Image (cartoon, rainbow, N blue to C red):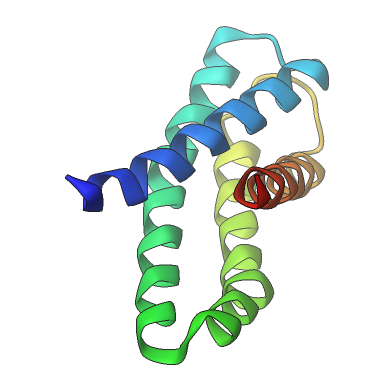
Length: 114
């Protein structure tokens, strides 16, 4: 059951931060909020899995570097592609993806510290 928690907590926090941030940025359409949820259900567990594997094989320091410098930009790009294709609200999909992910990363780091 502990393994499941490794995936649920980051996903929950990501959804909380990104959906709230999107709402504050003017994305209040239910379909767009659902899109944000679904996109993160796709990308977040994959990111967490690869991060855990990197930590196991390379150590925490190198894993964090690879996660934030390589894997997060890939997630931003994947999410951007989904937003570009399906977002109904007239927002720049790349800027939205970058902002939501930065907010999620900062929120996750703050939660991890406390």
